[in-house]
Length: 351
Image (cartoon, rainbow, N blue to C red):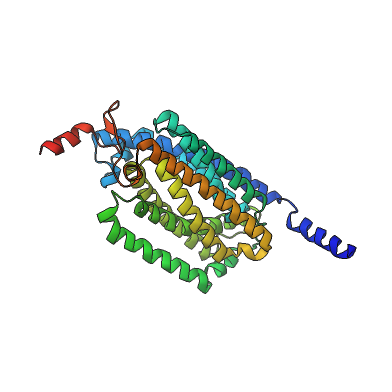
């Protein structure tokens, strides 16, 4: 009996032996990334509002924001955050790094409260706390990073039937959303813009992780730049990131930041974890207790983001006004919150 108890204790000790040095590096980089990305949402939104005053809004297909310096400040801030995020994926598994994005929601919500006057309700604060608790739970029980010695190994994982089926399904759904649903419903249903960003984002993260591993191995002395697989992953990253940026700009310009951020986080994280489990088989290296604990942490984060979302509904007066309709007028700066000048609305009414 004592031997059995000792064996059980040893098994538990092995299951919770702590974070590896690579996981800690990934954690620090992931936290830094969340700060920069959370702040970038607010700066970019300010830039989009300013650009909409004198040009065609991003939400209706305009690109006047490209000439707005404030938008570029936000874009540079986001790039810094994404670089940190990129590096984090090279050291830690996606199931650890991706949920840390919940912290960017907190930063975005708090800054939106003070800078954009998007009120953060008391339950929103509770939602932020739940996001922190859920993220901490996942961090403490995340799997160790898979040992990979060549980008060819990653390519082999990406070429397995299960992931190829997932990638083909994602591409098909994205094309249907872009060409069939977004032209009709993009301005009134937030899930179409965010759906494209999230689905494409799950593929971009897998490619970013592959590229990050290739660069890490190259810097450590094993050149991976000679393999065509490295450049293929780089091309996929470029296409996916440009697509995400385009549709995220449309979502930010059309809908409230405090609504866009949590919905984008929930969908993006869900699809990314699913893609990582399929491609890198993260859960194969964990016991059922760890997997269930991670799922509980993820559900806790989802609960926090749901509270943030519902809090915004309370502040705006109704769910339909917060999610389905254009944002309310902000007469102080001459805008509706989605960036349409009030005088333009008045002219439309009289015509």
